[in-house]
Image 1: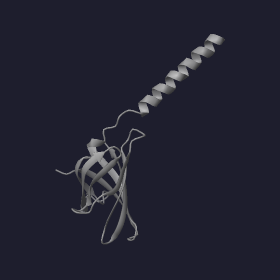
Image 2: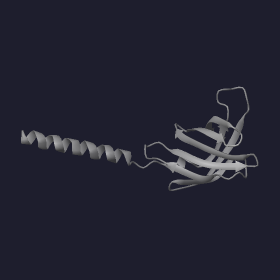
Image 3: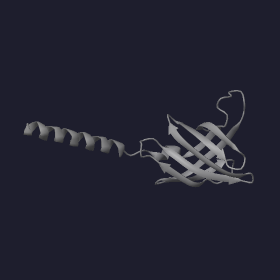
Length: 131
């Protein structure tokens, strides 16, 4: 009985540490670098409602670049990889107001939303690398 308890404890200890180490696996956030073409209305394949995002720097859990059009700086860019997936949140703004955006990276694409605080809309978008 004592041997069974010891073996069970060892088994669960190994299982716990193995799961913990898998969650701490390094995620390559540098895949975000570059220019991205955002389809601002992915449900409509016949429109040309696109924006651009250029990510110029990824350091630690932060990023820098431009969003929507040239000259509109990304602000407060934060990266979170604790689930093994790259999630990003950022703010940006222009003459029409401030925007909160967030996205995640999956299979070479970005899937995100942008909330325009004073314009009363939430855009859902999908981005691919610009060619």
